[in-house]
Amino acid sequence: MPADDLRPLHESFFNTIYDQYKDRLYGYILAIVHSPEVAEDITHELFVRIWTDRQSLGHVNNIEHYLFAIARNKSLNYLRKAKSDARIMARLKEAMRPGYDAVDEHVTLSEYTKLLGEAVEQLSPQRKLVFRLSRQQGMKIDEIAHEMSLSKNTVKNHLVEALRFIRSYFARHGVTCLFLFLFHIN
Image (cartoon, rainbow, N blue to C red; front, side, top):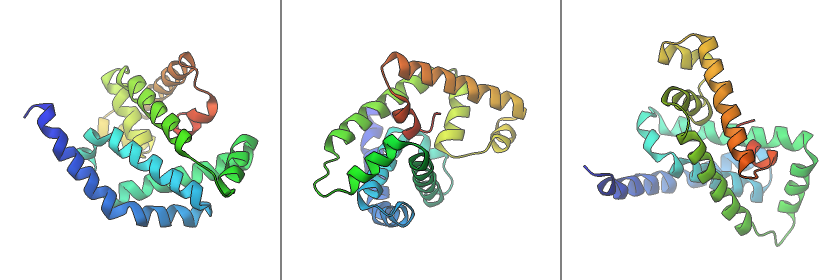
């Protein structure tokens, strides 16, 4: 079946996932971050990521576990970073103010999601797989090594080189460290 014929299937599957999980994920994230605006942003980010990586969803055995793992990781990483980063703390306070409009931020996030996809596509097939298993499916080094029949050191090296390449790709396109954090590539 040509790729164009698969698009409606991807959209239908995505819409089903979105309708089934968006409210539960939002509530779960809200319970962690305690800010409706930030919870909304993280929920939206999560679904942007799912849409961007929709081709790799076929490799996910348990979609609910996958979605909630991403939600947990994004929320906890946001809080960890906010605790030590004054810029994110200011953003969190700004988001809590009435009248905050995240539309401009959403557009920027979409642009950076696209940029990340472009960078990942330039990786070698093995590095790309290691990156996706680690950063997009949340697998640990040991799990990746076992699944790919590689040593832990080889997996670590692939991941380090993939992250180094992605950081330099983002830097060449003027992306700051704040956005790199949002994409889990620091």
